Image 1: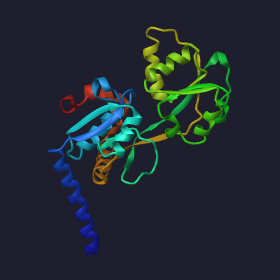
Image 2: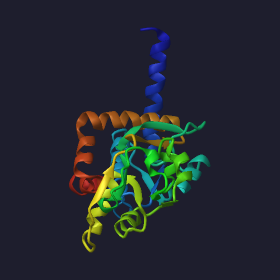
Image 3: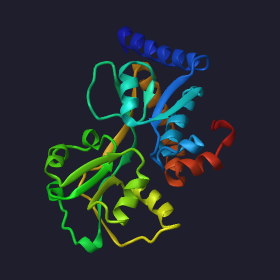
Image 4: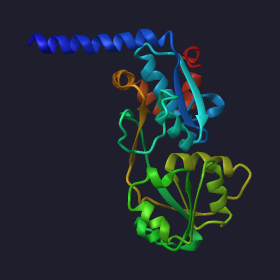
Length: 258
């Protein structure tokens, strides 16, 4: 092995170790969505993405996280201004000084309609002429040609609180809602506790979407990636996904989940 390669490896390890040591003294500020269960649950400071982030950073000795909950657009602004260290939901775009990690999870956005409408929706273009309610900033998260198609809809709106999407669909106030499959199932279970659920159709017209975390610091991003590899190898990652982030926080190592 050449001296240059040995030196580069030493410097990388030194940087990562230094970052972990510094983390005990400095809180890492994280911006997360306000309403995105089961991925992000503000009430319990948990959820699938939150627990994966905590576990991966903890595997690197980083435990001091200060998590703030806000809209996706607000989180995007603060990251661009350098006022937060990590954002969990950020539009998939390349921006100088913003560093994208390996994916924490894979989202699967779908279109949903009432079965009684008998809509045939096999592609994004079949949304044309329909009223659609999507999650906030969907036009920047969902791949083209979705953004272009929104110009040909009967109406198009986005909401922060995705529970409202299920309510609007079941009451027939909109033709189609667009949201992640896990998020829909979470809110559907809540909705059916006090409301009648009408038959619905899931239209899988979108590609699976990787959701990385976005960092203002490259070294922190690289440290997170190393931690992510560790928890995948140990099985901890699979436990978080399988149990749901909130359940995982309650059942496993509760003393370390703050």
